[in-house]
Image 1: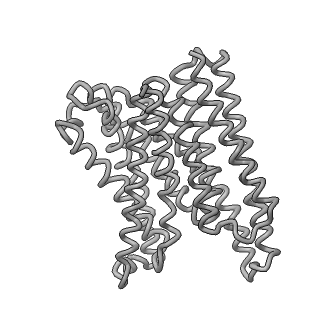
Image 2: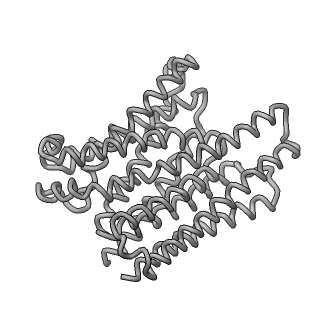
Length: 345
């Protein structure tokens, strides 16, 4: 199997894992948002990344003593921004659901995650057929994002006039508007993890020099980047623990299943990120431009399946569901255009 073919298959697997990681939140009982997402953050941003470093890097944590400090600090800055975006992402899921949140935030993330590496790392291709195809793909993605937002707005209106409407619809309306803003902001910050790969090549090169296999070299990027992401995330959770007096919920009887669900979320998410890192290495210079949209497309499809399966569109009319599916279709067209652009040299 060629490197590109293997990269495509691994991208699909990584996307399925990532598109599924938030589904366990639907089954958490008696915990607040900050309880389950804090467990996810510790597992996904600290335990898993450093475990991968210890298992795959011969010198382990000592690797960073001789690593480029400038690149490490750049990853830390990317990580802090990514951590803030993940707070917004989690809040967006709580506000408008898995399907819409993933479609809007991930779609915007894909557009930026493809454009920025292109403009900064391959500026000579901007005014070529390849560059034009990439811009077409981004335009299609933006149309998909707009359609997804319209579908969400219509679904909210339908819930207000349908048999499931109840007192408190004003708060629900505000929550959708707030959730839409959160999704957009999360989408703006999410590509920072991709930028870590694109601008952290010095670390992966050094990892190769000390004997780290190509498939594991991206692990040296995840550890510092995601550890930095954990800082703002935990600070926000601590604020919510104090505000809601929710720290004690961790000790509630029968809360072990919630701990397990949070750990599963972290394992699914970090596994998808680690696999995507392998994809980026296999695809080499076209990794951030080809691997990223392939990864994102599977996430969108998988998260949409979970959204429908868990009843997020129950009670909505056919028109809003058709528009939502049309938005997903435009997103996929956009991803395909971005992938096709790599055929042009």
